Length: 85
Image 1: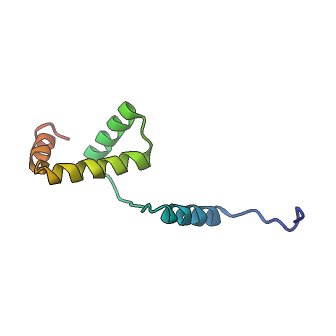
Image 2 (image 1 turned 45 degrees about the vertical axis):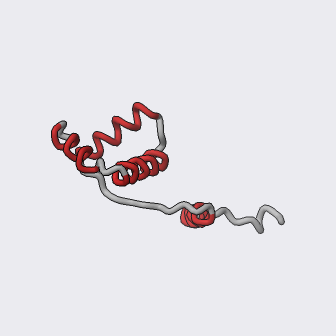
Image 3 (image 1 turned 60 degrees about the horizontal axis):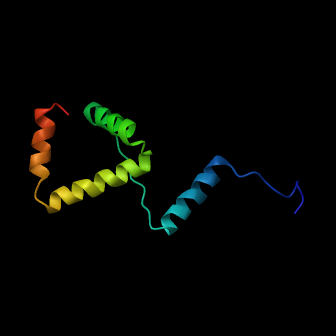
């Protein structure tokens, strides 16, 4: 293939291909808006762990699920309320 035949991929095309590869790997994209309190927690955890956004969200969901299974969600929520988080 010559240089003229090759077309540069647009950013949208690159993103589409990336999302397809992630889906094929069994991953799902989640999006949302963070409250100011949650954003402070997010930044604190990110600084302490050096996790990227994807790892942080994935681990947060897994930890929340573990707390749910152990019946500790109420305890965690109470701690957040007491510490203004």
